[in-house]
Length: 72
Image (cartoon, rainbow, N blue to C red; front, top):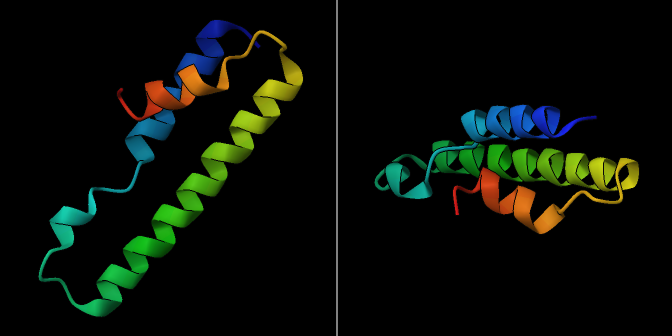
């Protein structure tokens, strides 16, 4: 994979990132529970992709990639 691929997939993950929990203030508990579930699922997917990329490319910088997704 090329750097362009890593960036494109990181951008896709950014778009799929669950919204901030602050938005759910005052929401019903079932909505909060769904949000937590989506967030956990999203993080598992993000971390699995990072693990895969690291296994495919020794130059892959996991910390940088995760920070890029988090917009840090």
